[in-house]
Image (cartoon, rainbow, N blue to C red; front, side, top):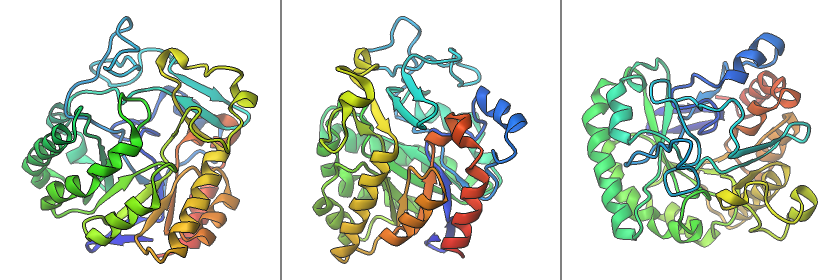
Length: 329
């Protein structure tokens, strides 16, 4: 169980992006709910799709630039395309390669919509600063803090914040972004709500030790997607051929069994070094994965990619039930 600052966050989370900005899900989820008895999110904690300070809402002709790659309906904030070409799903394997690129309205507009304020149970908001320089990103984080603080009294339920420091679908080097973490945490901690970070397996454990020692971070979630081609542990050629199917968007980020395995190894090493910060192990796709996460030293688990495939989505109800049993209250 992740319990920080007196608030129980949960044992199992639907990771950022898995159910949209407000937990509404996507068109295929409505079909799964009808066809798959095990497709049920009850008992998990929702984390909203990552938001940014500036709008990233490309039209169909603007994809591939630095404005996100997933055109959304401005009213519903759902994808315009039924099968977006910036997402590549291997249905049987339950693997996903995505280059969504943090598409969405600017953060202030998201708060003004008022939908987060009416969510009735504990949930998380995800944010990423995208400035070119470190100073720019700290300034964005400060602006986000001011907006969040203004709207926070209107929330109906406890809310926590997850700072995304590892999206591979922007123009940043995720490894460099880890240098920002402590500074951004110092800025944002004035909200006095639970605050964590989301990282990928390329994040040096040394950096996380510094974060843990700062006392400013309540939890971490690992793994975020792995930038295409960035790990020699994965046979990219065998999976996708000579080039990424999303090469026109920069390659994308990989979610799948190998990324989960690397996260398990990362968590195990972190614990062997005596670092005790609470960890959410993402990428689980079955009960055995929940067990592995527990053995490695995680305090909770999360899932996302399995919500996209009918061959795996039916397991969600069982995963949630098992995770709540394993990690308890």
